[in-house]
Every structure is written in structure tokens, then in C-alpha cells.
Amino acid sequence: MRWDRKEAARLAGALGLALLIAGYVRYTVLEEFLLTNKILLIAGGVLVLAWMVLDFGAIVGFFSKRSSKLGTNTSVLIIAVLAILVFINYLGVRHHKTWDLTSEKLYTLSDQTKKIVKPIRSNITIFLFAKSSDPEAQELRDQMAEYENLNPHIHFRVVDPQERPDLTKKYDIARMDQVIVVNGARVERLEDTTEQDITSAILKATSNTVKTVCFVEGHGEKSITATDGKGYSAVAVELGKENYQVKSINLVTSNDVPAHCSALVDVGPAKSFFPQEAQMVEKYLDGGGKAMLLLDPGTDPKLDAVLQPWNIKLGDNYVIDVSGVGRLLGAGPGIPLVVDYGASPIVRNFKGTMTFFPLARTVSIADTSKTEPVSVQLLMTSAASFTVPNLGNGTVKYDPATDQRGPLSLGVAAERKLGSTDARLVVIGNSEFATNQWVGQQRNGDLFFNAINWLTEEENLISIRPKQPTNRRVTLTEAQQRELSWFSMVFLPLFVILGGIYIWVRRR
Image (cartoon, rainbow, N blue to C red; front, side, top):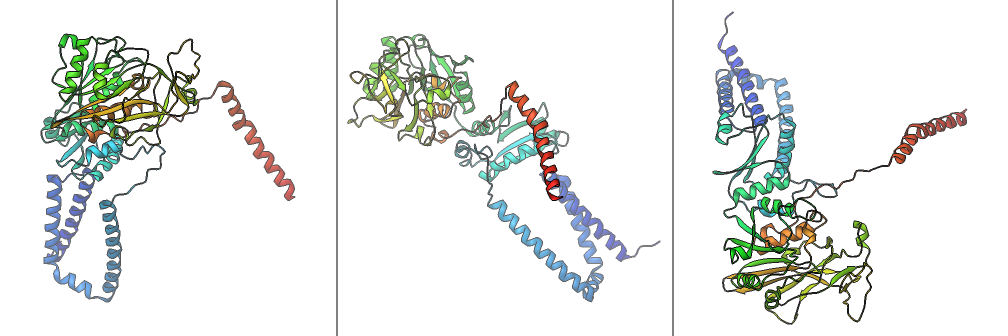
């Protein structure tokens, strides 16, 4: 059988159309415009063009028939509908809008992520080395779509290590499901794919400097390596995720506050500072330093020489809250509740939320008429709180002669202009609120980390951190489980059966 020119042209057209479809499908699956895709599309286009040129007369004759004209009209209508759908889809992509119906807004990027990602102007690529068909790939693709919609400079790619050994070798990928964030020559590797981990990796890949938070030790302070309830290990880990370097320092052995300290933090000193140490802290602040002092009640840190020039008064008392909130946390009135916050960037977005302070003392502005340094009372307790000089035997009572009734200030943030730089100081009358046991309660963690961000002048990080889902699991006792089993397996079916018999008898 011999093929004439028209048959060859039609075969070329069919093959070209198949190649075009194959190239498009392959691109949509891999989401990368590889060399194979280019070859398929170019070859398909050439074959379709050859068909149109070689069989042009037949094409014109086909469309001149009456039936073809009717078919053409139908095709035009179909194409018009498809064009409208494509246009609507285009608008949907350009003006992306989703609705998160979860109570914690788990599928909405946090304010912190938006502040970090939105200003980025360099091209950031997040690679997942896995099969495109893997469930994790689809799940992460949905998550990264929110980042891509937030900033067009963010790109997500799923890479099959077998198809792209060059990328696998270039980024030294040793396992499947590895996720990396690439900014030029900088590469950050992720151990997990939560929003917090992804945002942290993007922050590290785009930051030009790493600031150091120095924790003072030597006075019985809480340890940044301790993993028990009283430790600060969770704080240290979180600061690392926010691109801070964390170090412990001893002022006696260092004989000064090290120059590399971007912020000096002292959490719950049980023993007093030596006068020379207090002078070191004072000198550090006078030189434009930044510090946060978390001072528990029942201790005398001997830091008056530091606090007085900053117009901050440290109360020698305990704050009692009789509003009853302590019972919600399984404790007594020694846990003041704060829902009223001052006009500071540290607590700007805290309205309508709570912070808790187990065993706190008052920290207030000594003279409110002074305008220098600029001071803000951060944390105000409720009117149902008051001070007592000590806890005694555990029974406390308000004495109007010696005690102060709420609202009471538990923390102060102060700022002093020193030429081209600012010295900043945050003092809070409690260190328990940011321990491993309490840092995850309500806004406690945000308070600590926002204070660090404000001290180090990283205001773009001051926000609400990524959410965690609320535990809504129902725990039943053995008796409750037995009752539920009887109700669902005996009484409920019996009720349905009796109801059916009653209706059947009534209808007869």
C-alpha cells in the first residue's frame, strides 16, 4: 500500500498533536520545563505545521461544507466556554483567596511568616527530593502554595533524585524526602516541614547577620540546656530557629559583657550580683546595650544601680490574683493573669489574649512624670489582684495598710537614645513564664521572643508565631466507656426497633 502526500500529512498532524499533549501533560506532572518537554513540544509543533501546509486544500474544503460550518460553530462555542473558564482560573491564580475554617487558623500563614517572607526580593527555591506521586509531596505542595501566593520570589519544586542526579549531587542529598531551602549559594536543610521550620529556614537563608543572645549564669539562674519543667531549653531551641546564636556567659570570668552579645538576658537569679557585676551591666547599657532581666519574687539581685537610672522600681512583694483563673491551671491565686497590655511593639498584637506568671513581683515605672528614658508598663494585672509582702504559711489576705491593690504592673520596657544608637531594657517580675513548663501557655512564649526581637531591633519578627492544633481528644474513664458502649450497641438500636414497631402498629 502506498501513502500519498495527504495521508502522510494527516499522520504527521495526528502524531504532532499527540506529542504536544504529551509535552504539556509531562510539564504539569513534573512542574519543570525540562529538555524532554522542549523536544516534545517543538517536534509536535513542527509536525502539526507540516500537516497544515501539506494538506491545506483539504482543510479549507472541510470547513466549506455545511455540516462542517455547523460543527465549527459548535467548536467556537466550546472554545469560548473554555476560554472563559481559563480566564476565571487565571483570575483565581492572580488573586488567590482561601478560607480557613479551623478555630486556630491552622492553614493560614502566621503574622510572623508574612513579615519574614513578604519583603524578600531574592529568588528562593524550596526543593523536595521525592517522587511526585508521594503523599508527602502533595501535602507539602499545598502548604508551599501559600508561600508562593504570598511572594512570587518563593518557588517550590519536587525533584525525583533518579531523574535529576545532577541536583542530587549538587546539594549533597543523602536521603529521600529531604527538603532544602536555596538562596543562591546558601542552602538550609530542614528536619521537619512545619510552618515554623520552613519559615525559619527561609529566614536563615536570607539573613546576612546572626545575632547572639547571651544568658548570664553564676547566680543560680535557670539553665538554657535543662530539659525539665524549670529549664529554658525550649527557649534556646526556638531562638535558634529565629536565627539567633545562644550562649551562656559568666560576668566574673569574662570580666565584662562580651562585645558579641546582641542582647544580655538574666533569667531568675537566686543569688545577688556582685557590685562589680552590676557595674558591668550598667556600663553595657550605657554603651547602647540591650538587656532583659527576669527577676523572681523572694530574691534580692542587688541590681538597684542598674534599675534606678532607668526609672524602674522593683517591688519587694508577691502578686496575688483572686480572680479564680489559677484554678483553671490547677494552681492557686499565686498565678496572676494578664489581659491588659501597654503600648509597646512587644505586646502590640496581644489584645484579647492571656499571659500567666507563676509567683510574680511588681515591676513599675518609678516616676511617671519623667520622659527620659521612654518607658512603657507592659503587663497589667486585673483589679482582683493585690500585693502581699510574703506568702507566709500559704494563707494570704489583703491588708490596705501595707498592700497595694490591682491593677498592678508586672513588667516595664524602657528605651534611651544614645546618639545614633538606642539602649533598651526589659524588666519582668517573673522568670517562670518562659520555662519549658509554661512557655507554651497562651502568649507566654510570644512575650519572651517578642521582647528579644525588640531588644535586638529585629522588629520584623515581632508577631504571633505559628499555631499548634488544640488537643480536642476526649478521655473517658472505664465506666464511661462501658456506658457509651451499652448506649450505642443496645439502647440506641432497641429504641430504633421499638420506634419502628410503634409506627407500624399505628399505620395498621
